[in-house]
Image 1 (cartoon, rainbow, N blue to C red):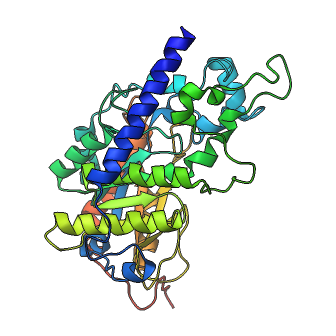
Image 2 (cartoon, rainbow, N blue to C red):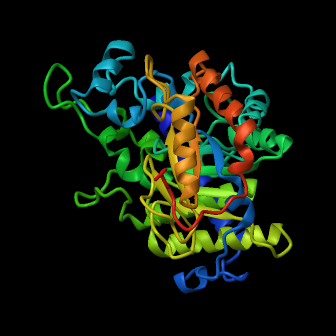
Length: 403
């Protein structure tokens, strides 16, 4: 049986390798075919689209199989960290990670109560002008219908094109559509899956990340000195680039978010110039695309601050990304009030920024009553005061107080 499974796994790897090769040759023309070249000097031609500057408020679905255990963010990593709270939770509820790993959590994500059309109508009413779907988190699970990576939401879990269905719902409501990719950090982030317990009855029993049948999910084992947020592994960097190019080609998002500083040097420049050129091709020569990452750019892309705000007015448009609670659903979590979200929004807008806020969904895909009340509260305020938010530009100074 093991031999049969190994043969099937090997066949899949060969198929994927051939698909990536064909994709690289046929589906991805050189980024030099367009206005933007893969250099920082060329990227300085970028101009911020007016739709983004006017929008001010975006909602985000930071959602996927890591919501299943109801333990919050980074479960897919922490479940492999011996002695951690998530490791202990996993032992108690699922078993040892050598036998029941993250690969076994993924099929439990069914999203059976998810109604993207209903949620998008709610988000529009609440004042969102753009919507961002999770594309892939650090768990290396793609929420789109990928042809180059088997671990995706069409093959496993809900067996739906989550990104595609979110996009259709956003277009129906007239919202701009974006996708977040957290994939760049995945290679090093997932390395604990290659470890084993150091004490106890399962000492030295390898976790399931060591099984070569699942290397396409957990990655290869990293070199000893490769432990930064973004891996030094060139093969991984290239794989990341082709994965995100597939996402761009399939959905042509208005916004692409990277959960990192500007990624992977030449591969990052290749990707971003490709994204800009493809967007211009789609829009008849006009550039409508927004690329955002956690690095200042002098006008080459939108700088993003996670759970933070600037302390002064920025020369360039920027974005804060945050959540009303934890990044993934966590039982018993406390949420920001609608008033708190509105205060953040006003402060950010006064400094030339946008607010992208995650609306926490249950593993099943719906919203808890508390979350629903917060979203509706934001909408009630925006219905009255939105004209003072949308389409505005910052005054000479921000935060004036009465004399």
